[in-house]
Image (cartoon, rainbow, N blue to C red):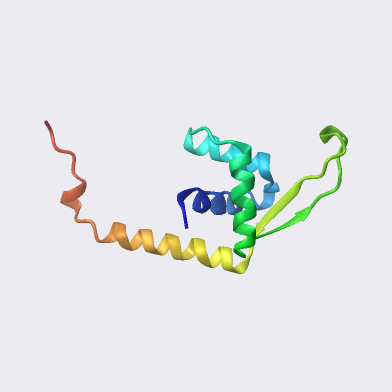
Length: 108
């Protein structure tokens, strides 16, 4: 799984109660990473993650402020939850194996 896929899965999990949809996910990623990311890249990744079975989506009702367009809301599936837990555990395992001396700043 690529970094963008990972952070999008994590963002969908963070926005669980706040309605995870394309614009909200994109804005949260920009806020958290201070990197520019296009909404089209987020949408493409969301659909790829859905095809892989890590996300599911449902369409909300049309709203007047969106010109009658509907939002597509995303949630983690059991496979998506399992994937981010496995990633967390793998990263923790790597961090646990780094000697403290390796992370000390050295003066130049």
